[in-house]
Length: 513
Image 1 (cartoon, rainbow, N blue to C red):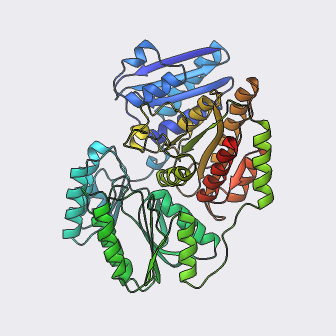
Image 2 (tube, rainbow, N blue to C red):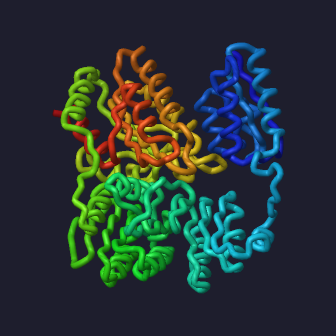
Image 3 (cartoon, rainbow, N blue to C red):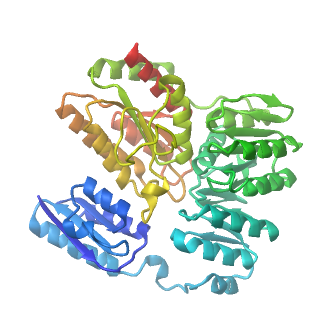
């Protein structure tokens, strides 16, 4: 094998563009690996994991571009580098033949009727752009992460003063008047309104509602930190007020990653004051109580089901059959080695990851994770220990990189690494479809799992895999095709995250019985 690595100093490219260049290079003849990325600290760790980090690359600056190639021959590696040069020299397609405003002020001048700005710039610049958008009278969907809590609070206070919404920062999903923003699924319009400090929580609930034949009126994202004490639920309280007044919304759903107790109480009080049915799912709070029109649920799937029941719909959610579950459990158990005893959950969706941690705690107790801030906080986010469930969409992994729902490279590398550990008994993975996500994620995942199983098989081990797909029949990736691709690779496909985690928990119990 031949490897090449070049560093182009002070040459910045957008992470999504670099992802697409990397994917194109992997299809070049003889190329087995290709990575184009900015030389941030985390990206250098990714190169190290791939065995491609050179002494020169280890001291590169964050604004330097690194292109690394592994190919079967020297000539093929050199040709791939030449292709990379050509691809990076091309103008982005969106810039060809179109007038591109260079500032928010110019964009508003071109479209004075616009009332919503979508901002996705590096975190260092996000505050300035979002503040200017609010000053121009726009609502803001702020996709950018790595924004300080102080700046988030300042932006949300400014938004409230101007009677505008500041959705974010790190807001992954919204559906406004039927239009998906960020990562969103193709769901029907309907009578359920969602306000969520959770991107994949919104996606999971809205997708399951679609499977139940229902739809979404509005889905207002708040950003994952809105229910922290520092922020005080400012955006969520605004969203609740808007949905309470919305004639197109009959049932309101609230979901969040684990909230601050004080802010959770404030949000619950606001929910109880709304005349419409309100379904609340705070991940990690094991409550299913009801108080008048307010109902609390334990899982995202239960939340969708409860919203349906509030509308008088009693159709059950799609689910794996008992035969499918038992066959998976017995086959996996019969092929395991005595060393295999730990689960590794590799999630692209942060809320789905939190839900997995919460549900697995009932079975195995505490699980190591990069989401914990206790004794089970993962010391090195790039290495697992014992039972581990990680959110690969966390800021630590996405700085100067596309989110794993867009670029699965980092997770695919992690799958191959986990396959080398003789103690791994099961992989638990989410696959999120919809607008903004990778156009064919199942194909890449199936290919990676096949490689991982070859690694395990060479050491005499079987590697069972459960994947939960978050998506709808109308998503651009074609749900049926994605599921079929995974099943063809002997991967069990669950219909929702709670089902997948519950089945994984059953398997872990069987390992210790």
